[in-house]
Length: 259
Image (cartoon, rainbow, N blue to C red; front, side, top):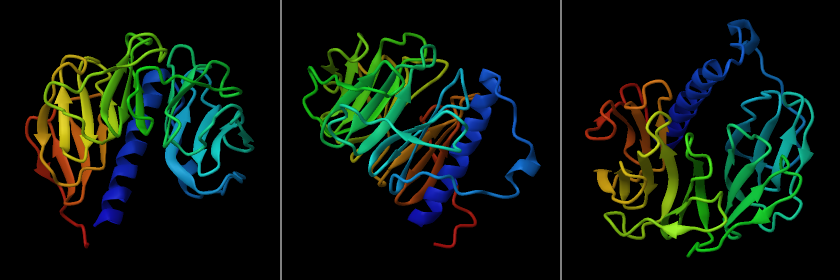
């Protein structure tokens, strides 16, 4: 079941990326272009499911591997390591500033949050106020780009100054759960979703208050439809769940799964 759930969510993520490409004006890929696949020359170890695409220059890509972050400026034909000053190379989250894509943020397993202002060439730790340096997710407010949220092993933290300082936003309803993932509504960025070991939580006021939407079913990932953000998909230990009302209610969508 876990493999099936992972496969389905990857497909949903690909759909979301395709829709996002339409939004930023990236030419759609023809069906014939996906008939065959070519292995890209990335020699950095196993690739995590962390892919970041420059929204203004889509030929520039970033991926995270077990050996750090790699960058390509030719649509993946060649790759270069961009790990200078990145103290912990196990990167669990990677975000690009949508308006200033030379600025990137990385969440790491033990080193906390890092920021780069030169396309990953160098990195600086930005951990002031973070109570826990296990950062599983970093997201950027798409409207107020200096506002960031970090999901850590001690809950959610917010920064209003591009990561320079952080404040916990866990006290109202979320407690200090381990946060595996964060998702922000692209059209209403005051709405956030947190995937935790205590269930799936939602905030509608920038993290000030949280409510439990999907109880403990082993949620591990969440995808939001970028064109219809009220539609969500959650990958859990009990299968895939879908919500069409911003997480108020959930329905299992597992027909066809064999395990």
